[in-house]
Length: 149
Image 1 (tube, helix red, strand yellow):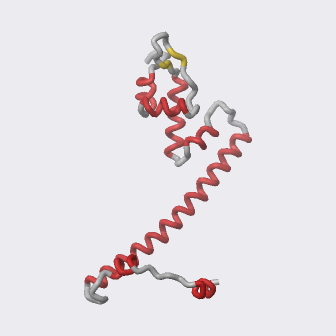
Image 2 (cartoon, one colour; image 1 turned 90 degrees about the horizontal axis):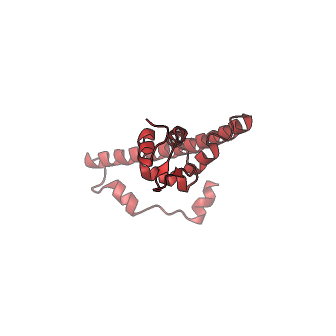
Image 3 (cartoon, rainbow, N blue to C red; image 1 turned 45 degrees about the horizontal axis):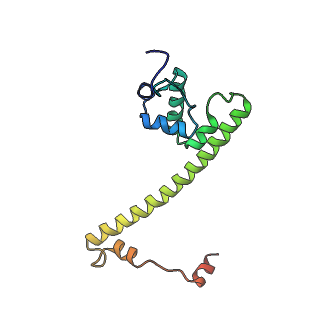
């Protein structure tokens, strides 16, 4: 491989599309490359590493804005480490909240499945209880809401 790469070569080496490379440039996550007289973009091997860093960070659930803040080349001292720690801590809190929501959702679905099974086994009324519940939501009144407090 030569020391200078065109966009297709960079994209292939980093495991992304040429469109992704252009997008990273527009977002200024990837520096604007030099160009040939014919207008072809020219990249270096450092650009491959940068795009790989971006993709690896995305696989960890980081947004492109978050990745922009973490890009290599800004130093690797303790202040950068604090930023990384704070970002990862926030991501873990986000993930924990999503996991909690998913557990609640799973319990609801399991309950609905059980109601359907009971209805189909003839242990319940002659209609689908889940469809009935969805089409007739329980409305809470102000009086009911005050009792919950």
